[in-house]
Image 1 (tube, rainbow, N blue to C red):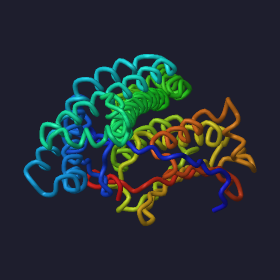
Image 2 (cartoon, helix red, strand yellow):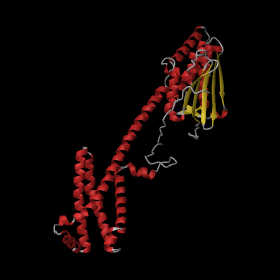
Image 3 (tube, one colour):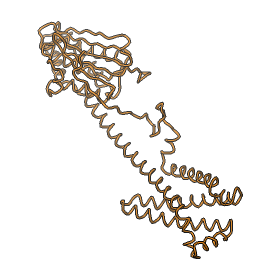
Length: 403
């Protein structure tokens, strides 16, 4: 089979209902991480407590041990340092940074830099007082002698870089998480909008009914009534009603088994055979194991409509439509072929013809929305004459949607 046209599509992974941004490698949602990120206030306090507990552990293992060895005083100093940092960031930094986030870039930068410096000075002063309470003021006198000053603010200057680094890291993490959440929310809204637009487009494509089919069918029924062939007219009207009920009741966003599709197509083709009689011969070549596959509802109908309108209707006799389906590994291959005399040598030209290519473009677009790069749409010329529309989609069943 020569590939005349292939539709390549980009995959869109649809998240399961209730899933958040954190997914395991096997596709299952990490519920505990999504629970943390579901509420900003809860997330803040969980990260805040966990972060300062980590700082406390690091402080014990490094700073306080070198200052006072492994003692009760060193443990108290680590507790005090961690508590000072926790309270400073919770009571001062968080509301100030929250206010700064609502400002423009220049004012945000000024507020953050100024407040961070002032809070670093305050933290240094509080830690100095704590150190003096625990270990006495002799260390401050020694620092004053080495610096040649008794000014309290100058005495705590050596502690500022550490506290500035600590608060700067906290600020970077705070703004990073908030901007990540903001970006994630914007992306979720964009994905939701795109999904709603795709669903609307899918419904529009799926509900396109060929008015010529309805007109010709009703006209044929009218003719049968005028010829007083009430039995045939009633049979045709019953089949039309059943087909339209199936067409309108089926959800365009859902799939149905190929067996159901075949039954619906048989109704449709029975109506057309009433119109064309011996001019139309239909052959179904569908493997048994393909009948359980799930496919988009009425996905083949536009190809059959196209074959009847532009092939069978142009022939005085001998018209044939072959509908085939078979499983090839994890793919389902379907085709609708006719023996019409007017099929172009380059079938892809049909997709560019706004008059004759509407149904085929409909099929291609539905595959695009439903399967992305997992679907394949082809047109080919049949020798000695005719057109074949071929579809290749993932083989899916009710219990295994991605087998």
